[in-house]
Length: 106
Length: 408
Ligand SMILES: Cc1ncc(COP(=O)(O)O)c(C=O)c1O
Image: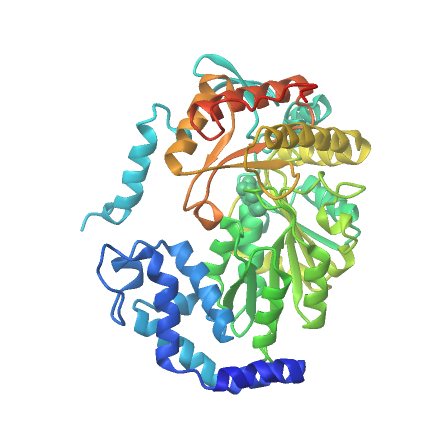
């Protein structure tokens, strides 16, 4: 329901949406779903993409495309992930936790 | 694991490239004849991939200046400016570049790569923030590896994307340094600099612009995008290179910041490498005079851009988004790009081939760079040649569309 509430706020008050999106809690499942959605084009055969998938190794994605995907996720969840932090992320789970962590610190 | 094992993927790609016959990364210019022609593989070849935007590499006044300087001061400085001192010519060149931009300070580096590497990595320190365009040049990315600042990328040429990232920093302490380029080196597109500057002002961020490909090409006096968009005063740091329009080698950074000179004793890429030799400094000083005295070179450059860009576009090629001294021709994949490149070389035309990971968004490109002294005939010929190869490679429709004059 939070999502539809956000839409109403957009109409009602443009200024409030920022505060609202930032304080809105995002669920881990939602973040993982979004990451998997971005990674789907790089799936290796029919090996499923799961939390433990090592992004740079188990998939066909190159480092530049990873950074571009991160930029999309940053905007989707309204966080910024420094490049040095990206370099330390290996798995889908680690990426999700980084996003959740940064989002909570908002 | 062997030392080279981790490059296995790259080695394989490189082997693919070489199966086409020539190796694009080991091209030999057997003899350079002029800014636009060289002997390659024993054959006279048209050069359309050398960043020699004004054709000044063979300008007689620049060559004479260099020769005189060698006779007067020798071939090299044999050390850095910190160790061996500055020659009067280094200081004069810095004064002239500063005056060219109307800025108070200038530092000259041995290459543009080192200017970016040294200045960017040093300006932003621990607790600061560096925000870079996603399509930034390798020298900017390498600076980011050396800095202690937090680095965040924003979407290419997207001021809204930068603003979102500045906003997210909220009231965290620390300087914000935003790094942009005047004209991007792969696709020849220029930054919406004014919009970027507005965003930076709003968020109190410093602006650094690399005018490597726009020096000479843009602005009424050739100062670059900062001039053509009227924001020189809002650009805190302007970086550039002598290796393109000015036809030599070296880099610079100008600024009005009163403490700018502290960089001379903090930037390692300035302190620990030999300074430019007298001949280079002399030819660059002269080239800068030529840029200011001969605005017609800029006019000719853009006329040539139009001939090539519009000609290729009309034939159905997919190009970079706008006219620029660099014209990027999109090809479907790496092997087509390399095959196309080689076919052009066989036909006597040299351009650059750019393939992932050196390109944005994984695109494969033929990267053409124009020169003010290309002739219209040379470029029209090039469009014809590329159209033929394009059909042969299935990049353009095999049959030219029949356009029957007066039909119906
Ligand atoms: C955007 C940009 N910045 C900097 C450089 C480095 O210039 P230099 O050749 O002087 O090292 C280049 C050229 O390679 C460039 O394209």
